[in-house]
Length: 469
Image (cartoon, rainbow, N blue to C red):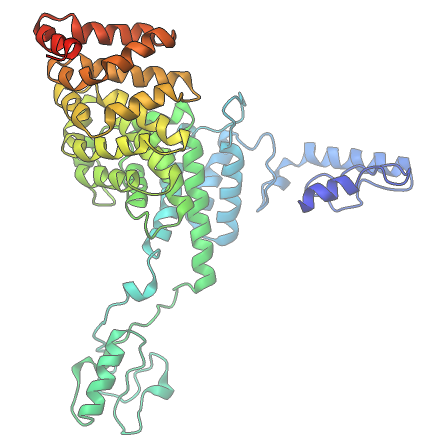
């Protein structure tokens, strides 16, 4: 709002002439002067400086020169990410965010694909891993450690020397962890008894971060995940990222810890996997490729199921879309098959959500799952409320006609199985109404009625359904 108001206030006010807006990176007032000649000279000098010295824009700034995406500068981005220095890291992440950002309909030529920068993906993943190493609260990571240095002296030199001696001339433990209360209670019971655990101390290391440093590390990890997400939208990067085991392990670990991890980091990780899903083979987690984080195919599917059961709309919609894309690859079917009952139940529940996005994601996933095998069709048809809610999506109707057509085609796929005809025959009148009332899907429901009534093996069932015998 402040930026908009400033922009409005810079216009014509009270009959005066509007001042030209200063360009980014130049001080305010540099383009306005009492003399037109001085303003023209300043603009010419600035243009000459940009043309003559583009390297001046390569510092820690948000500015990106048009020639920055050249190959000779790619190495510098990778080195800046690997340095770990705050200014270099911030500059590299800001630059990559600008270079990787691309609208859906944008045909920019300067969008830098990941495939052209060797080592960039590993450097970005290292930024996320650095945060993941300290993501949990420090109290959970502290473990008592036996200190042997200076065990025969009163003051060990580790710091907190003023607390080293208690009032009873015995060594007092100054740590803040659980072992501190244990040793203090033991000291009150028997102050003269020697305690081996008196040297335990959960000290913060020399290079540990305070709360502000942890917050900055978290922001860098989120920025790196956003860059990786942007890269996953580019077709040039899909195959490389889908075959990069470290990348897949990092994003799956993020969604696995969605209850404790930063929400934006989890969302970026989920969207990255959804974009890579058509090229993803879960068998990569048991391949011979180098592994950085131990994760199995079952753990990967369980992490997806955790997101599918989430109450956040973006997460369960993304997980449903991810399952629908993963099942297209037959190699992923053995890992998803044990979870089909849970998947069907959750997707049918999502059909009743008022959000159209949830209904669309659920129908899209069920459309692919219904084509897997006969067992999936039988379980889906016998799932409570499944047929009713699919019909409701069609008759409501959903604002996207393609979603309604897919819901109708799911019902047609279920009707192809003879064991499902008894369940679908109860909706014969509803199907007939849709045939005559909605011409958009009349062809699909006409085929459904034909499958239910005209087949020889369903003749007796159809007679019972019509005459009530």
